[in-house]
Amino acid sequence: MPLGDPYITLASLKNYLGITDDVDNGRLEDALASATQEIEDHTGRQFNDAGVASARIYERWGCDLVYVDDFHTTDGLIVATDENDDGTFETVWPASDYQLEPLNGIHAGRPGWPYNVIRTVNDHDFPRGRRATIRVTARWGWSAVPKPVQQACRILAAETRKLADAPFGVAGYGEFGPMRVRDNPLLVKKLAPYVREPAMVA
Image 1 (cartoon, rainbow, N blue to C red):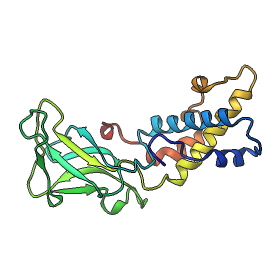
Image 2 (image 1 turned 60 degrees about the horizontal axis):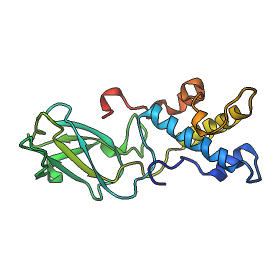
Image 3 (image 1 turned 120 degrees about the vertical axis):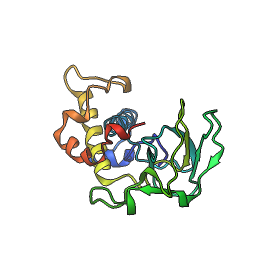
Image 4 (image 1 turned 60 degrees about the vertical axis):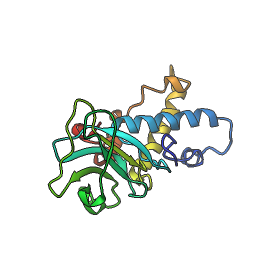
């Protein structure tokens, strides 16, 4: 699914709620969109696959390290730097001059993790400047949405939808805000391994 798409399908949510008709599809889609956005806000991550590579700009974190958004493949990967602090990323780094982490795609014992750190090797440093000096072109996102994230989206979307039916409940996408991940301990637990540390958020 492209970045920004819900983490589960409408059919999956309807099956979870035991809904067989299409009368409420619009509100269910709104609930899915709201739940997906809340998960991204809570974790600081996007779990879908962008599908194509695009460029993003970053500041270095120390001379040999840059934290970037998640990307799951080296296909289309380009690391370039602005050596003169002039806004032009004229130096393209060979893959032999940097290391992608987490190593082996394993984070906290969990396999299937995307890359989110680029570390220099061979005594090369990222340049320092008054502006961001590192441009990374990559296929952003995850190869597949993790199961706990899908489960969290399903639960949160269902709770959001039910909230609209409660007395004095809310209705409409713009008013789905009161339902938050932090309001549900189960969701907090499911998503805890995926929350980015503050230093890692660009």
